[in-house]
Image 1 (cartoon, one colour):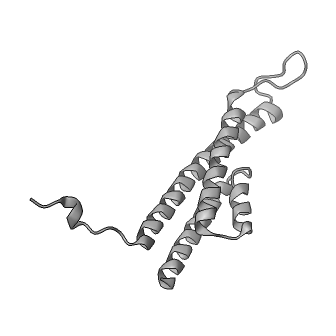
Image 2: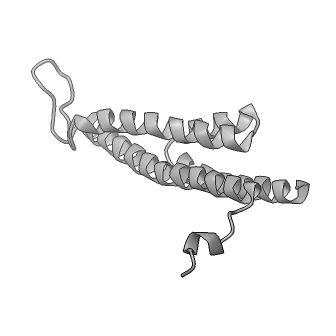
Image 3: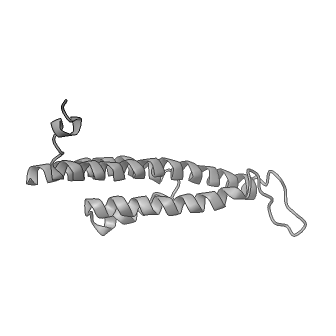
Length: 135
């Protein structure tokens, strides 16, 4: 009887590193979409609450929540997780400071997270391809 683990060779160190780096990108990608969606929901809340004043105002003249006061709170914590995934990806890829600044901005400027996700995908592919040719 043969051992199945003995028949499959261990991945090369660079292949294992590439897999971990692609995993970091996948985590970033998920958080970019979640953060972008929550930011759009937060923008909708702010427009409906402060511009349209859908639910009116309270006795102090403050606008009342439309979707819920939880939207800003949830977006804030999701942004923290997003920032951690950005830092993880950035540090693994060893990119310049300008790239982390752009990726971080993606979580606070509406729709930018979707654009930056596409840019980051190209950067990751370029970085991994450059590593392969260097080896």
